[in-house]
Length: 363
Ligand SMILES: *Cc1c(COP(=O)(O)O)cnc(C)c1O
Image 1 (cartoon, protein in one colour):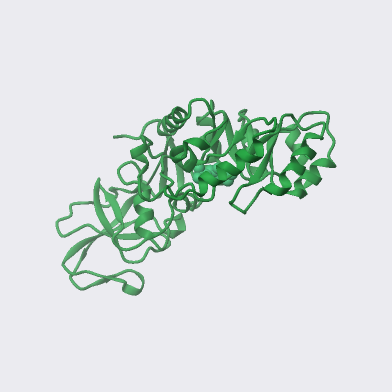
Image 2 (cartoon, rainbow, N blue to C red):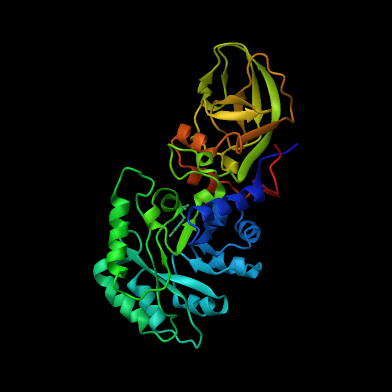
């Protein structure tokens, strides 16, 4: 009997990589594996995608772990480095870095090495989180160009604030800002598109696209599930029934008795809870698959378990399989129902959840 387990389908992962590559065949594609591969296991994801053009991580420790486990693909630090002590590691571990602020430029300027470092100047074209403001970008670009150990020409990137809003032309404005800056310059690679850009904004697909959530087979927008783009979910979150109980009309269940039955029924107790990362704010009525059939979550999510209404005629038994999300129950549906984002649902899984890697999810 399986307790909370995230089954990771490497075939689906590689399928998604191929689909995303085919959307923009002349671009390189980065597998973004930050935050432990969006909860899927960064090392395993990077290894399974061993032919990926690039891997992307947020922090240097994530990159070092990939290199230490034998990943040889180019790796880009999407937030760059945070102290000058990181700089020698960029060289020895062959890491490419984003430069998004003056402080990073200053640290880099004081560094010395006889090898080349590949940098990506990050422009703030409207996200206003990380990135060099456009009025300052010329100066940073020239300063980077003047450093002898910085590989020329310099790569340029930016990140979109609203690429998941299909009727918002802010993305078009950001692309225009990017192009205005790069137009008359000799630059290396350019990278604008993350998941939203890859799927919805063709003009943003340039030399390198950065695939995060879509790589894991999840849509970046609530209105459309990933399967409509030909993508397959990589993670299936599974557990088992640990109790099947008779339940009488008007009885409550769980902490604070927030659910009360309107009929005699059967209740299933599933071994997964917020201690596994199944979010406590997931609401009553959210679908759960028991033996392949959708039943509603009822009562409050506890630390180690949830309860579901199996119905009066249930024949389910202790030990039977339960699926919280996966192939036949997209995590987008759980997210929508609970007002959470699929990004947080998948990255929140805790270390108690076992990750199991397979080549093909059983039909
Ligand atoms: C996380 C991240 C991505 C991936 O975003 P998705 O929406 O998951 O595709 C791309 N670029 C940067 C800079 C990021 O931080």
